[in-house]
Image 1 (cartoon, rainbow, N blue to C red):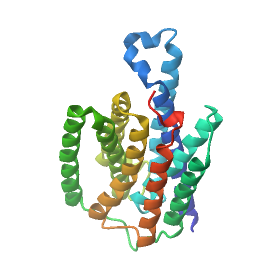
Image 2 (spheres, rainbow, N blue to C red; image 1 turned 180 degrees about the vertical axis):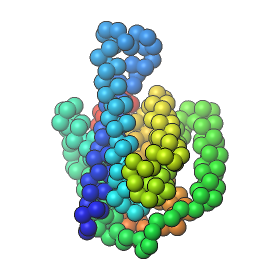
Image 3 (cartoon, rainbow, N blue to C red; image 1 turned 120 degrees about the vertical axis):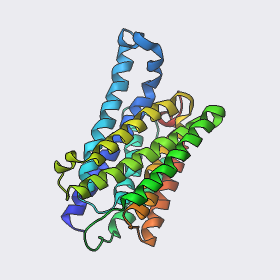
Image 4 (spheres, helix red, strand yellow; image 1 turned 45 degrees about the horizontal axis):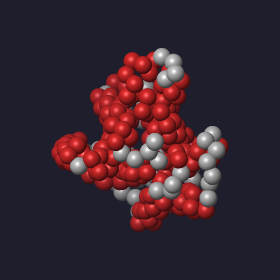
Length: 280
């Protein structure tokens, strides 16, 4: 495994940890937003500061994800690291929130780490330079927009599906932001600062910001036990599908097996009756 890939994986894991632990912090205090202007005054100010800290952590993940994409050649490789962030969230629950960690949590964490290891170890670098097909990306994006509109309508009409619908949209938007970030780097020839001169990086930021807002929307009426696995699963699944049509690249069979292990681990972990994953 070359040093560039190792750097990309380390940056991706750091970004995933920031994003997922940040989501846990947000979920703890998201209800403070219902206080309106009172959230800026005691006794609500402390809760607002905690919620804002979670937002800042999530935002800091964005540049780390961008740097991770620079050192890797597949968006799906970076997105697959999302599960590691949930393991970090579990540690946060045990260390900071003093919650118990049992065999279920250890087993699911092992699945996530194993799946991530499989995807990373068996990664095959693409031959030649990385290229994208803008037309194919636009077609896929239009399909996703129609899907998002339908899911938003379903979530608004049937409240039991609120958390799943908006969680799916949020997770897909984060995955889409990774694809756009990769396109920005390809267009700039891999120049991290040079990418700021093309539109893709700003579309990626807009997509990630929309995901952040919709995560809060999902948390308002959806239980975290449903929202968290939905978001993280589609952070992984969306780049797997979109990069195939946009970049013409795909993981190999054993790496898809690793992705399946990660998603199974996410579902087992986040359906655990632990306080950090439950709606409050």
